[in-house]
Length: 235
Image 1 (cartoon, rainbow, N blue to C red):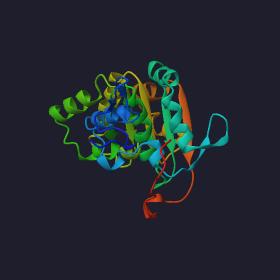
Image 2 (cartoon, helix red, strand yellow; image 1 turned 30 degrees about the vertical axis):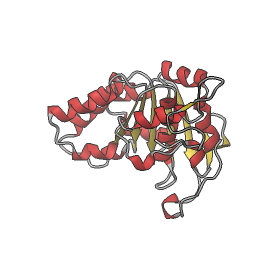
Image 3 (cartoon, rainbow, N blue to C red; image 1 turned 180 degrees about the horizontal axis):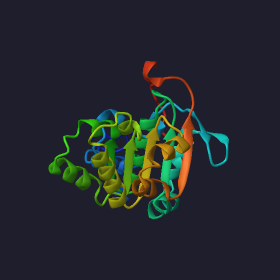
Image 4 (cartoon, rainbow, N blue to C red; image 1 turned 135 degrees about the vertical axis):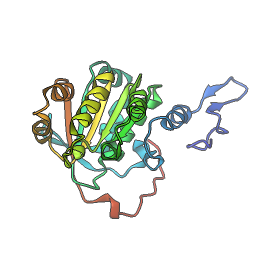
Protein backbone atom coordinates (compact mmCIF):
# COMPACT_ATOMS: atom_id res chain seq x y z
CA UNK A 1 0.00 0.00 0.00
CA UNK A 2 1.46 3.35 -1.04
CA UNK A 3 2.11 6.01 1.58
CA UNK A 4 -0.53 8.74 1.25
CA UNK A 5 2.02 11.36 2.25
CA UNK A 6 5.01 10.01 0.28
CA UNK A 7 7.04 9.73 3.48
CA UNK A 8 7.52 6.00 4.15
CA UNK A 9 7.83 2.97 1.89
CA UNK A 10 4.19 2.06 2.41
CA UNK A 11 4.80 -0.03 5.53
CA UNK A 12 3.59 2.71 7.87
CA UNK A 13 7.02 2.79 9.51
CA UNK A 14 9.90 5.23 9.15
CA UNK A 15 13.17 3.41 9.67
CA UNK A 16 16.36 5.33 10.34
CA UNK A 17 19.46 5.17 12.49
CA UNK A 18 17.74 6.97 15.39
CA UNK A 19 15.11 4.25 15.65
CA UNK A 20 11.84 3.29 14.00
CA UNK A 21 8.71 5.39 14.31
CA UNK A 22 5.23 5.35 12.84
CA UNK A 23 4.56 7.34 9.70
CA UNK A 24 1.54 9.68 9.69
CA UNK A 25 -0.08 7.30 7.15
CA UNK A 26 -0.13 4.44 9.68
CA UNK A 27 -3.64 5.07 11.04
CA UNK A 28 -4.99 5.71 7.56
CA UNK A 29 -3.71 2.31 6.47
CA UNK A 30 -5.44 0.68 9.44
CA UNK A 31 -8.69 2.38 8.41
CA UNK A 32 -8.35 1.35 4.77
CA UNK A 33 -7.84 -2.30 5.70
CA UNK A 34 -10.82 -2.34 8.06
CA UNK A 35 -13.00 -0.46 5.57
CA UNK A 36 -13.13 -3.57 3.38
CA UNK A 37 -15.18 -5.32 6.09
CA UNK A 38 -17.80 -2.57 6.54
CA UNK A 39 -20.05 -3.37 3.59
CA UNK A 40 -19.64 0.15 2.13
CA UNK A 41 -18.78 0.73 -1.52
CA UNK A 42 -15.11 1.48 -2.17
CA UNK A 43 -16.21 4.64 -4.00
CA UNK A 44 -16.86 6.15 -0.53
CA UNK A 45 -13.33 5.45 0.73
CA UNK A 46 -12.45 9.12 1.22
CA UNK A 47 -11.12 10.78 4.34
CA UNK A 48 -12.30 14.18 5.48
CA UNK A 49 -9.33 16.07 4.05
CA UNK A 50 -10.12 14.63 0.59
CA UNK A 51 -13.60 16.15 0.48
CA UNK A 52 -14.81 19.48 -0.78
CA UNK A 53 -16.16 21.35 2.22
CA UNK A 54 -19.83 22.21 2.66
CA UNK A 55 -22.01 24.08 5.11
CA UNK A 56 -24.08 22.22 7.68
CA UNK A 57 -26.86 23.54 9.87
CA UNK A 58 -26.31 22.23 13.38
CA UNK A 59 -29.75 21.65 14.89
CA UNK A 60 -28.27 21.74 18.40
CA UNK A 61 -26.88 25.27 18.10
CA UNK A 62 -28.99 26.43 15.14
CA UNK A 63 -25.80 27.67 13.47
CA UNK A 64 -23.86 26.99 10.29
CA UNK A 65 -20.79 24.79 10.74
CA UNK A 66 -18.19 23.24 8.44
CA UNK A 67 -18.69 19.66 7.28
CA UNK A 68 -14.94 18.98 7.32
CA UNK A 69 -14.54 20.43 10.80
CA UNK A 70 -17.48 18.31 12.01
CA UNK A 71 -15.86 15.16 10.64
CA UNK A 72 -12.55 16.17 12.20
CA UNK A 73 -14.14 16.27 15.68
CA UNK A 74 -14.13 12.46 15.72
CA UNK A 75 -10.33 12.52 15.52
CA UNK A 76 -10.48 13.39 19.19
CA UNK A 77 -10.45 9.97 20.90
CA UNK A 78 -12.26 11.34 23.96
CA UNK A 79 -15.18 12.62 21.86
CA UNK A 80 -15.18 9.49 19.70
CA UNK A 81 -15.36 6.97 22.52
CA UNK A 82 -17.81 9.12 24.44
CA UNK A 83 -20.12 8.95 21.40
CA UNK A 84 -19.64 5.17 21.17
CA UNK A 85 -20.16 4.51 24.87
CA UNK A 86 -23.28 6.72 24.97
CA UNK A 87 -24.80 5.06 21.89
CA UNK A 88 -25.04 8.47 20.24
CA UNK A 89 -27.14 8.90 17.08
CA UNK A 90 -25.82 11.36 14.49
CA UNK A 91 -28.43 12.38 11.93
CA UNK A 92 -27.26 13.80 8.58
CA UNK A 93 -30.25 15.10 6.60
CA UNK A 94 -30.45 16.81 3.25
CA UNK A 95 -31.64 16.57 -0.33
CA UNK A 96 -30.34 13.98 -2.76
CA UNK A 97 -26.76 14.41 -3.92
CA UNK A 98 -25.60 16.73 -1.13
CA UNK A 99 -22.98 14.30 0.14
CA UNK A 100 -24.74 12.82 3.18
CA UNK A 101 -23.47 9.28 2.63
CA UNK A 102 -19.93 10.44 1.98
CA UNK A 103 -19.92 12.53 5.15
CA UNK A 104 -21.20 9.55 7.17
CA UNK A 105 -18.53 7.22 5.77
CA UNK A 106 -15.76 9.78 6.33
CA UNK A 107 -16.89 10.05 9.97
CA UNK A 108 -16.77 6.26 10.27
CA UNK A 109 -13.25 6.27 8.82
CA UNK A 110 -12.09 8.51 11.67
CA UNK A 111 -13.28 5.79 14.06
CA UNK A 112 -11.58 3.06 12.00
CA UNK A 113 -8.31 4.99 12.31
CA UNK A 114 -8.62 4.48 16.08
CA UNK A 115 -9.01 0.72 15.74
CA UNK A 116 -12.81 0.64 15.81
CA UNK A 117 -14.89 -1.53 13.51
CA UNK A 118 -17.80 -0.32 11.42
CA UNK A 119 -20.77 -1.54 9.40
CA UNK A 120 -22.65 0.10 6.52
CA UNK A 121 -26.24 -0.79 5.65
CA UNK A 122 -27.98 0.73 2.63
CA UNK A 123 -31.65 0.84 3.62
CA UNK A 124 -32.66 0.69 -0.04
CA UNK A 125 -31.52 -2.93 -0.07
CA UNK A 126 -34.30 -3.84 2.35
CA UNK A 127 -36.68 -3.92 -0.62
CA UNK A 128 -34.44 -6.52 -2.28
CA UNK A 129 -34.20 -8.82 0.72
CA UNK A 130 -36.04 -12.08 0.09
CA UNK A 131 -36.56 -12.47 3.84
CA UNK A 132 -34.57 -15.63 4.19
CA UNK A 133 -32.97 -16.58 7.48
CA UNK A 134 -29.47 -16.51 5.97
CA UNK A 135 -29.87 -12.91 4.81
CA UNK A 136 -31.02 -11.91 8.27
CA UNK A 137 -28.10 -13.75 9.86
CA UNK A 138 -25.64 -12.09 7.45
CA UNK A 139 -26.91 -8.62 8.41
CA UNK A 140 -26.80 -9.42 12.12
CA UNK A 141 -23.25 -10.73 11.74
CA UNK A 142 -22.25 -7.55 9.89
CA UNK A 143 -23.46 -5.38 12.77
CA UNK A 144 -22.25 -7.60 15.61
CA UNK A 145 -19.33 -6.25 17.67
CA UNK A 146 -19.05 -3.09 15.57
CA UNK A 147 -18.59 0.24 17.30
CA UNK A 148 -20.00 2.32 14.42
CA UNK A 149 -23.09 1.58 12.33
CA UNK A 150 -24.26 3.61 9.32
CA UNK A 151 -27.93 3.36 8.32
CA UNK A 152 -27.88 4.97 4.90
CA UNK A 153 -31.11 6.55 3.60
CA UNK A 154 -33.21 5.59 6.61
CA UNK A 155 -36.91 5.89 5.88
CA UNK A 156 -36.70 4.87 2.24
CA UNK A 157 -37.63 1.30 3.16
CA UNK A 158 -41.02 2.61 4.38
CA UNK A 159 -42.02 4.14 1.06
CA UNK A 160 -43.27 0.89 -0.42
CA UNK A 161 -45.46 -0.64 2.28
CA UNK A 162 -46.04 -4.30 1.45
CA UNK A 163 -46.80 -7.61 3.11
CA UNK A 164 -43.19 -7.79 4.31
CA UNK A 165 -43.29 -4.49 6.23
CA UNK A 166 -43.58 -6.17 9.62
CA UNK A 167 -40.56 -8.32 8.81
CA UNK A 168 -38.60 -5.23 7.72
CA UNK A 169 -39.51 -3.47 10.98
CA UNK A 170 -38.47 -6.46 13.08
CA UNK A 171 -35.20 -6.81 11.17
CA UNK A 172 -34.33 -3.12 11.57
CA UNK A 173 -35.29 -3.25 15.25
CA UNK A 174 -33.05 -6.28 15.73
CA UNK A 175 -30.12 -4.60 13.98
CA UNK A 176 -30.39 -1.42 16.05
CA UNK A 177 -30.81 -3.27 19.37
CA UNK A 178 -27.99 -5.70 18.60
CA UNK A 179 -25.63 -2.79 17.94
CA UNK A 180 -23.81 -1.16 20.85
CA UNK A 181 -22.15 2.06 19.81
CA UNK A 182 -22.43 5.10 17.56
CA UNK A 183 -25.12 5.07 14.86
CA UNK A 184 -24.83 7.50 11.95
CA UNK A 185 -28.07 7.96 10.01
CA UNK A 186 -28.47 9.61 6.62
CA UNK A 187 -31.90 10.56 5.32
CA UNK A 188 -33.84 12.95 3.12
CA UNK A 189 -36.18 13.55 6.06
CA UNK A 190 -35.99 15.67 9.19
CA UNK A 191 -35.79 14.01 12.61
CA UNK A 192 -39.43 14.94 13.27
CA UNK A 193 -40.50 13.38 9.97
CA UNK A 194 -38.55 10.22 10.81
CA UNK A 195 -40.21 9.98 14.21
CA UNK A 196 -43.64 10.31 12.60
CA UNK A 197 -42.71 7.61 10.09
CA UNK A 198 -41.96 5.06 12.83
CA UNK A 199 -44.42 6.18 15.50
CA UNK A 200 -46.84 3.31 14.79
CA UNK A 201 -44.17 0.78 15.73
CA UNK A 202 -43.42 1.57 19.41
CA UNK A 203 -40.66 -1.01 19.77
CA UNK A 204 -38.71 0.17 16.73
CA UNK A 205 -39.42 3.82 17.58
CA UNK A 206 -37.99 3.27 21.04
CA UNK A 207 -34.86 1.57 19.66
CA UNK A 208 -34.19 4.44 17.27
CA UNK A 209 -35.20 7.55 19.19
CA UNK A 210 -34.67 7.07 22.93
CA UNK A 211 -30.91 7.74 22.78
CA UNK A 212 -29.00 11.03 22.54
CA UNK A 213 -29.15 12.71 19.13
CA UNK A 214 -27.01 15.20 17.21
CA UNK A 215 -28.62 16.44 13.99
CA UNK A 216 -27.15 18.18 10.95
CA UNK A 217 -28.67 19.36 7.69
CA UNK A 218 -26.40 19.48 4.63
CA UNK A 219 -26.74 22.54 2.45
CA UNK A 220 -25.46 23.32 -1.05
CA UNK A 221 -26.05 22.04 -4.54
CA UNK A 222 -26.23 18.53 -5.98
CA UNK A 223 -22.63 17.26 -5.89
CA UNK A 224 -23.26 14.46 -8.35
CA UNK A 225 -22.94 16.95 -11.22
CA UNK A 226 -19.66 18.42 -10.02
CA UNK A 227 -16.18 17.72 -11.37
CA UNK A 228 -14.19 15.89 -8.65
CA UNK A 229 -11.95 18.21 -6.71
CA UNK A 230 -8.21 17.48 -6.68
CA UNK A 231 -6.86 17.81 -3.18
CA UNK A 232 -3.18 18.69 -2.91
CA UNK A 233 -2.81 19.25 0.80
CA UNK A 234 -3.24 16.94 3.78
CA UNK A 235 -4.70 18.16 7.05
